[in-house]
Length: 380
Image 1 (cartoon, rainbow, N blue to C red):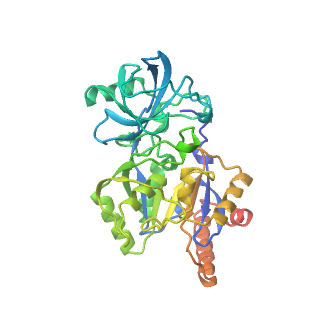
Image 2: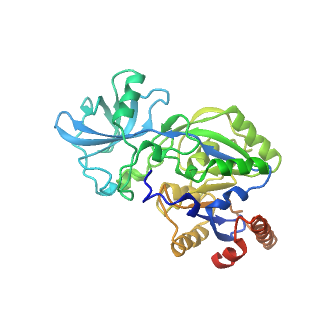
Image 3: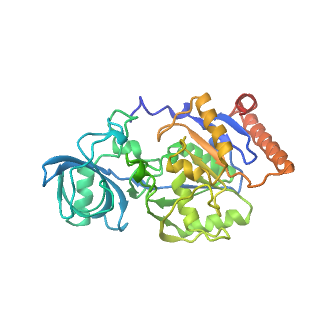
């Protein structure tokens, strides 16, 4: 593990924004106590592919890095959407990376034990469709042998594959880690079970978080396949029928659940593709709260948060992140953001504050939080 760059889990922070706008600065260890019986927590169980491949552009004999960024067909690991860079590695900021050699359809790439062919360019010099000749087993073996996790300059030491797998990682379909899931551990899951809090999973092929090009970043997130099990769809329906909240662990879960929902909030089970962006004007039909990392304005992940809260509240939260030195990026601290009502009356606001105090008192009585002190200190 990258111990120098990954904070001790027990010292990680959790910034909570309640439905009434009240904010609290808490240790992330209290996550196990924040939800009520009947609530349902949904997480992404996708494991992360070793999706960064260094090699050579055969026609020019120049160095190239390929970052796999999207599936053309989820069961088929021989064809991908990919982003190309020139010579260099993750120690250079993505936005400062050299462009790839000029690419043309039919160009061959030598990527360790794998050979790839550029099938077509996708209206951007870095974006292409890529095909690996060979069968599924050979391609997956080549990825496992030669590929590395996609990585950015804020972590200098090379990441191992297990660094980007969450505790619940299952099928390898994500291109970057569904990193909100790093906040989960078996102790927290056991505590939820004892409290009557439900837990379910979806599998969502989380994509890249940055391409290094502002114009290309505006297209993020790309279309992403997902699978919702019948059991998960049934758990969502049961929780909503009983008045429980649906808490998404990460933006990928929000995207999957909302893509699969109808206006009544019913979620369809099965395989599908999440398209388009969730942003400020998106009406959420399923998810009531999101546990996520610390994101900055302009990022696609931050844009999704605007469906949960208005810009003024998110600006206050961002200011608190700075004041309390919250750590960003995939190995940083967390925020639990409850969806804010569109119109909040005084009575609703008072009820929200009272609910916050009730939850806070329960956490304090349990001995898991000094919430009364931190709440008074951290109100923004």
